[in-house]
Length: 215
Ligand code: AMP
Image 1 (cartoon, rainbow, N blue to C red):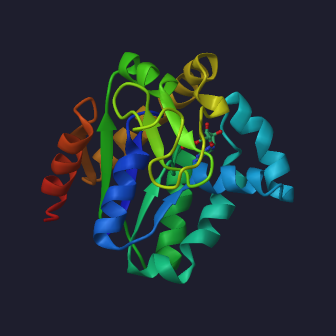
Image 2 (spheres, protein in one colour; image 1 turned 135 degrees about the horizontal axis):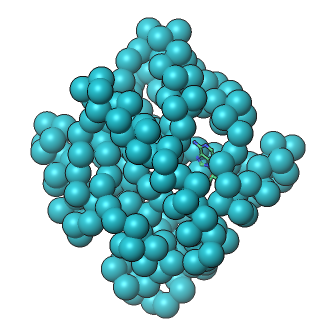
């Protein structure tokens, strides 16, 4: 299955994408993860991206689309994929269509994560990530057994710079209109599968699996 997970930051797309990708044995391709890894590895690209991520601003479409076009050409994406955080603008949506058509592929569905912004602000500011393996936790909804320690690898849990409240608000403002434009874009093509992302994690997983016919 070739899928896009669409929704504002904090809707749980990443968490759900990891679960479904494992179930379907397809790659989970998240632009945010690709960008953060370039920054952590201090690559030339990473240096350019740092300022955008720190401010919660969008990385320019041309840069993002170029990276994703190359990523989709990799061997593992031939078996299917889940895109998380891409596309984030209509320009990116159109670029994705073009990249897929060059590869003879098409999208099978776009899972839309619907949630109110108040819920998202609360979720993002309580989110903690493992600095070693990237696993995510939440201070209230999914706390680690031992404070500040990852249950999977023992790594230290940190707050992403862009999960601080001021940046969170900026990320929502920056993404709000684009998110709605993309929702309509995919709805008009009959690809949209909407899930209630305010529900608890496992309930959202069940809704996604049911609606996609995954057992
Ligand atoms: P995320 O992990 O999806 O919340 O993304 C973290 C940050 O990476 C965003 O706040 C943007 O600065 C950048 N980013 C991720 N995906 C995109 C995209 N498709 N287009 C532009 N910027 C992006």
